[in-house]
Image (cartoon, rainbow, N blue to C red; front, top):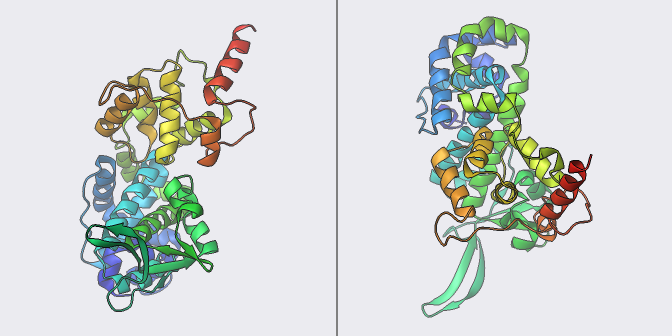
Length: 353
């Protein structure tokens, strides 16, 4: 892999290879951290871009870029879980954009370095597997799939995406044990791979000696975490019977508290449920602050739309249990038809105690 590619995909270079790049030989993690400390300000700038959702411009020099990347992970790991997940989300989206700019036949080799092993079948013309979807007045409507991956690998790579209907196997073009994919699909799988790798790399930087070496920079990184995120950790949402939440909703709520990324349908389920039991728009917006890709303007607009305050003024209903099951969000057999039915039953019981 050329050095110029490392400057675009620093996640593809292992820590061991970075140590050889820095020192010309394998060195201990402690020695490497001492070397990376020189990139402290650059790493903080990278983290700030992630927090603000701003465009980050990679360094052309591969050593500078990879060193900054790994130090940003170390600082985020030591500073706050929300910051680490925000960084992972930001880096994943950046790689997504990079993949979309690559030549079709180069994507496979890059994806393999990111842990996603697929086959390019585009050939001359780039269409690959051609599927006729129907006809229009102008002729055939065709879908082109330049890539394919074996079903077991698809399930592994798309694990976090399978709650979204468009990623379920039943909604994919599958033929003779292969799932056929577009370049846009591959970019999304690459994004998920980057997120997983960053969380794995972060575990390496959890030792005390990392805090000892990077103490000042860690404090500066911690200051990037929004005050609202920290306050949310200190107290639960007041005034509502959160202990009566059904298992599916409670699970989504806890995932958000940990700063995990929720799919569109998971967010819809949680937001409509909370609005339906009396939470205000502000309270629901506040709930989503710990999401790694939180943008208050977008979140508020979407939640106000769900609450019937925008657009058609239609208030959206909570998914039924049957719908939750089809989306892979249901995690228990509660014997109810909707999450609201479960909530009301439990909440009434609590009131009589």
